Length: 100
Image (cartoon, rainbow, N blue to C red):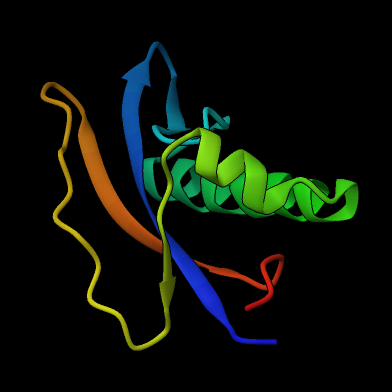
């Protein structure tokens, strides 16, 4: 199996006493008591979502429907379009759910 990855935009914003995080491309969401905790939690939630898609056999199809490109490990990712008004982070997530 060829190892691939996706490049996603993770956002973090403060809402009351919590920091809310979201993966813009996949729609996963989480929160935390600090920006770093919210960022760690959204990475974990997004990886769990991707694992579920793999188990269901619909990972590649879902990524294509959402317009999320796959990259070989040596590929250069495309530029990000970061929404204004929130802190945004680029995150490369490994995908073992797609075979070459």
